[in-house]
Length: 407
Image (cartoon, rainbow, N blue to C red):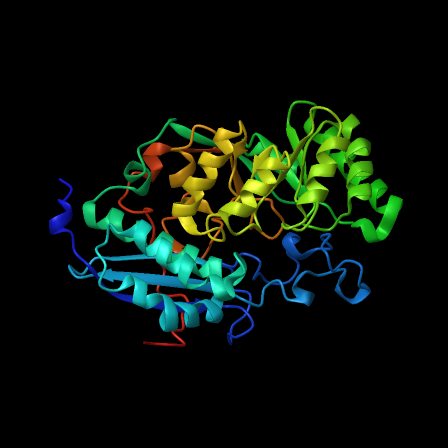
């Protein structure tokens, strides 16, 4: 039976580790920073970005530093010896923030005081967080580690602590270069990265729509196809692309603009073909910013639970979306998303990121750092697969983890 709050242990230690990224001796480790992959990976192959306008940074996202941060691992230890952990993308920068700043809000608290700790971390970092970025990534990782610890202390999976599942299984679409292969694996849809940005004008639109047309011919009319535009467009370009893509039943256009460019989202929503959805949110880092996107008419909010403030923030974002009749479908994040979305009534499906280099087989998103990370079977993960305490995974301590700071 769960312990009464007066019997719950306190948190005696928090530790931060990094792996991969520019500061590491070994690069291309994957893990929490799934962009930190080796050569010849679809995730780095001429994908449209805000840097596409510069010839020297057009081909590879790693060339402009997408993988410099690496993985952050936060581990919290309770006074009874139980440990919880989580991973995100913040690397050694995040380690410094945890060990030299956030530790004071964590150590000594009871393991169930997650919301108090979260609020203190958010408010204490406002002067240098800017409401997002690597600071919020770090706070997210701490928050997730605390939920993992709490679940392990009381012997329950996180989704049951959050109120329990509202469905028996989660259905997934796949993000990757080969929606046709994802269809054969049982996914409900496939999201492709666009390869050309507004810097390439009409020719870029023609090339990406040709890719869409080819894929539509491979998968048939009923399989979902979506575009991930990764902040690489302007309103005119996005509008023209949406209308060019409409005959091929494009389900949505995702993240056409930077997170703060709310007016562009508002304008695009007015201009899009009826029935096509506008989605964004993975690089948005606070509730106020999500409210602005919601007010602008974004159909699906897509926070990343490792970048938006953790599950504590994700619950607030889901409630905001629900109040406006919108969906919340988090960006990737594996078990950290699974345990949340299975409790949300406005998340009818979720995202699985294909991290295999050719997107031709299933690989755990955060491989190799998590032990026991589930992958969809036939495009589905069941509630039963999530029934271990905490997030149900363990840390692979054979990975080259470094603790660059202590306190």
